[in-house]
Amino acid sequence: MLIKPGYVRGYTDDIMARSATLALAVRRGLVGVGLPIANYYARNGIISRTDMGGFNLSDVPVVMVELGNMKNSGDALRMTSVAGRNRYAAAPAPPSLRGAPARSWHRTPESCQSTPLIRQPRVKW
Image (cartoon, rainbow, N blue to C red; front, side, top):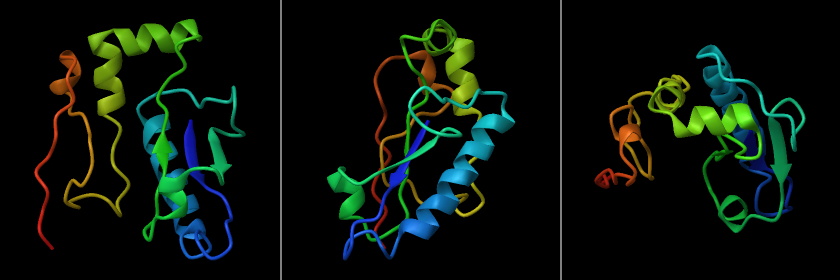
């Protein structure tokens, strides 16, 4: 499931459309590697939220990706296996993000085999 910012006047009005485009591109990448669209909470795998400070204060397009629901046995199996985690990690980045410097926590296919998250160094602009 993907979460994108909803309309909060004066805060998200400048990033809503681009965040929606980003959400569609990320969903397309996940579906492209055979991952199902989560509809247990969202419609078509994407939902808007207005109660998330990180979204409301963002000046750039933003989405949050929830890759599984542990209450769903298929999702739980996928998230607890190395092969399943590698499948999540194999989803291609949207073209707008390819080559962009890493600015947040992320996992690589190799790091999915271990528990700790890795931190990419910050890039000075």
